[in-house]
Image (cartoon, rainbow over all chains, first blue to last red):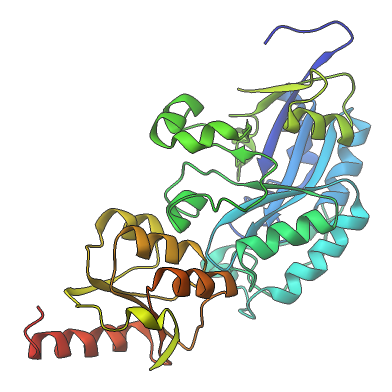
Length: 252
Length: 104
């Protein structure tokens, strides 16, 4: 990807978990997470915990002091057990989506001994809350309903790690439903787009991005997306996903 | 047992059964004429049932098909049936019945 005049490269990790995800390490508090992201040379991280956006704020506050941008998001587990990333333009939409999800989440209490701790921590890494429901359960919403809810709130909808046999949309649903409005597809670092498109030719119509899906600090930035944008803003990211106005992205 | 949709196809010859909730697995391994036991209600279920020429879909635990899935089931004449039983029980009963009627 050749850098155009008036454009800059921005390196981003589009999928990572914090200490709020039961499977995420307790070392993934805002301070440590941001430090590792900066050390990995990232300009932006997307915070995407399982079915909750409640850790985004404190990560964003810590990150802004370090010149790191944070895209607020969630990794939703749909009724079909399909994992989907959702990104939102601001905390307002994120909070609305978070409330919707928590209401639709199965009423199964988390057992920290079995699934791990799920804690909301503040900027100083003090625990401020621990949601009662197990966040890795599925919500009682189909993938189409989730897509529509995300778009109603002005967010971006991206099926996660579509190449993965566990919780990837192709494994769960056989193929991507033609009417599902995906703003992009996420592919894990274990696959490349060319091979995937050869296997499933209809995927050539989609744009792709990548995140590390890190659950531990050392994995942050292991797999990411390099954006070419005029500036690092929500609008510019949307343009890159659409492939308009010379805004682009490539997988790392 | 409830017949939700696709009733035109109810006289289809049944050759066996397949139980799975992973649609990619059904796409790869189910065979023509089988009934498919699942709790998935997404429209893609019908696309795959039709592609694989399955005799019927049986939804367990009281689930019904999504509206667009029921519509496609009607259009293609692939019945969607439903039961309040759990998959384990439904599969067991069908297995016994298929043996008895020498389908298997």
